[in-house]
Image (cartoon, rainbow, N blue to C red; front, side, top):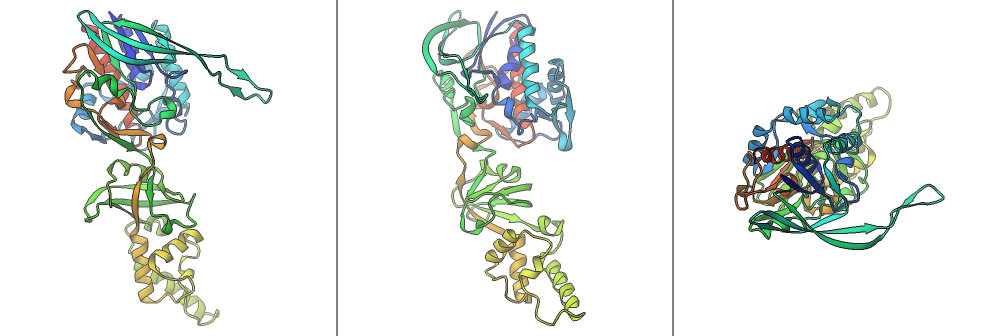
Length: 432
């Protein structure tokens, strides 16, 4: 049987290997010059491939769980290890290549595909899929590039496109694993959705996920580049909790990034506000009452002055000495409506405590797809079988990975779903 796979990301590579292991002739086309481009940079280059803790998915959560019941995480791990990728589990169930390099996972998958005789066509863009009585015809545009040039300084200048040609590929089964709309620099710009909508499938609205939040810039003055540990809560205009997370947040001039903030992006809606609890960064605990903590610091400073440093009242600024970066201190003071030189009165402490426990930032939006890690939304999963990933509308057509209306938290969940779906789609053809 001829199997054609559109897209050589995590899902496409897994599908190719599974189908080839079943004895099918497999061709994979990918629009990039190099396959598995996005996988090679995931996890800041470390490659968080899967997660063995509790599942954390959004979109069609039930569909995601059904897929991972049919192809459990531990079975995905076995597949990766069979490709020669040594794995190491870290905190919170995160699994990385033991080499701490995403590139070794790319090498392992590509080597396995080569050994199985999978044909890989790079620089190949699928234009349309045409079902027929005897399978499918897929119109493909192949771009040819001039050779790369190595400059005198050692840098490589990519060869420019010099020609295009079209061909039609025939297949008994087609697996679409061309990714979502996030990270277009890696070849996933959302155009592949059209391959399925043209065949009657429904596209659920898509938006960036796992990306920075954009907020009112005024409260962030001086904070760009500063990191904090915080509890984060995203609330709607009416105060209703949309989602919450905790961990590291990274301030920018116009918003908040870092894993804890990025995991809120898919829940952003007009008029919402980001509420940051900064107690952990200042006090080392989120269970400490900020006002009581500030009063203790004031008391200590007063006692030290009584011992011989004068009797001037403790200032607001002095309360933060030794526990906060000056820029964060200034931002908290602004949020509280106080100046650094004024006395740390009981009223001032209450205002500061509120600003620490609820550093509130009006959210204006999120970064766009070009700075998002994954896509929220996608093809309607009700039109696909979670046991096989086969379309319920077009027999012999499959979809896997970020194409579908499933997205997960940071921590390997999205790659794990892609690998699992690709394996199911590839293995489903074994009995055909």
